[in-house]
Amino acid sequence: MLRVTNTLTGEKESFQPITPPQVKIYACGPTVYGDIHIGNARKEVNFDVIRKYLVFAGYQVTYVVNITDIDDKIIKIAAEEKRAASEVAQTYTQAYFEVMEKLGVQKADFQPKATDFIPDMVSLISGLVEKGHAYAVPSTEFGKDVLYDSKSFQGYGKLSGKNLEELMEGARVEKNENKKNPTDFVLWKASKPGEPMWDSPWGKGRPGWHIECSAMVRKILGDSIDVHGGGIDLIFPHHENELAQCEAFTGKPYVKYWLHNGFIEISGQKMSKSLGNIWKAKDALGDFRPEVLRYFILSAHYRSGLNYDRESLEAASRGWEEFNLTFQRIEDALAGPDGNGPMDLLELRLAIDEVEGKFKEAMDDDFNTPKAMAALFDLAREVRRVLSQDARPTAGAKSLLGEALEKLNQFGGLLGITTAQRVSVPKEVEELAQTRLQLKAEKKFKEADEIRAKVSALGFTIEDVKGGQYRVLPKK
RNA sequence: GGCGGCAUACCCAAGUGGUUAAGGGAGCGGUCUGCAAAACCGCGAUUCGGCGGUUCAAAUCCGCCUGCCGCCUCCA
Image (tube, rainbow, N blue to C red; front, side):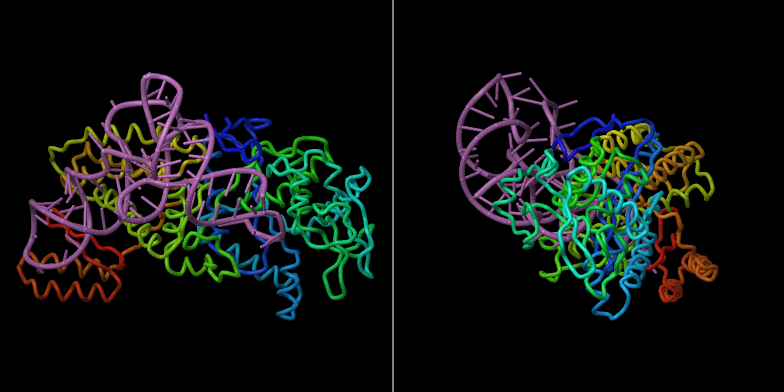
């Protein structure tokens, strides 16, 4: 039975979708005003795994990740770069998709852009005004702002555990003389000259941030959804406000399970522009394989903070190499001739029988990926132990190794820490390696070493293994 | 000031009342080896930030203290 930690209740609860086997998930996506950083990437990887595991567990999942393609930051960048906001948004939307593809993040079922849902937002805002939860105030020459009346919704603060009085005291909110309460937030913003604008009952303007998610969730998934996710920082005010908008409008519960992932930290602190410690995902991908990045991200529980530095990444990289080599070693062994044993296979048999149960148990516990990975490592270790007995396993051992490979591929694939594509060794390199084997047999070691150097220049490494065989690997 | 989270070996990191405190990295010892590398085996926390309490039993529950971090303003 799957259990998840729900921010709304602060507890780990058993997961029971509203209308099983359907599961509707919405996870806040990027605001496309720049390249995404590894913190954004972490959120996408965490929810990618959550989504894939729910599918694996037999649910019919509808997964939605939005693109915020209109907001203050985009407008600001556009002004700086002297181009249209839509152009800026397009550039970074594209960049985002490229990173997602590299990272092996499966495309969401829907990837709505805010600007495609303006009419839905307008109608939602109108409804809130009619119901007395929002009010329009004069703003610019183009029209009025519409603000949400936070005091009009009794449940305001229930997600983040804040109460209005305290919020008002500590409020560092922007000054707005027109606000009835300091915690009121903007639903619709009248445009200023030169800004993007859309027609509305309140003149020309653009949507506030929080309303877009509310509108898209309702349009695509309906009034009530099973899971809403995002980074921990979105709890307040973004998700609190979304909740207030939707529940005030529909009178129905908006989200059953709120899931929030922790931050990636640099030297124990969050990434921020002001600290100048932003690590872009595309730069990380330049230094490390995508599988290594996922391996690193998933080596911590999604709700924890995760400290990111080069050393940790390099450790993850070594760990991943070791894990990944297991796959190749199995494939090599299966492709080779049968040995004639004897081999001790008991532990491997047990490990194969246990892995699925251990993996599921870990993942069922609020998607405990570190524990799930440990389950895979346990199996991988037994595999290596068997392979080290003899590089040419017996037919019986091969059968077990085949089973192990299947399990490792299945679960490692779900986490996205395996690589589907083996680096293929060019024929030229293969021939050189063969020649070297021959030279070695003739004890012409000097010539053999020369070949190794040649192979190295071609980007590969030859490693000798037991039984007079060798292994060709891409150079590290 | 209000709210929340975290503190486990050299590093990362599971563990949420009860057998020997997962796993990974690094390290050390060994096996193997023309060399190199790899691989495999073995070793490593009598102890879970500190002090009290509850309990037959606590890293796990409660209280206090210390330290770090996040949110309360845009933020994954």
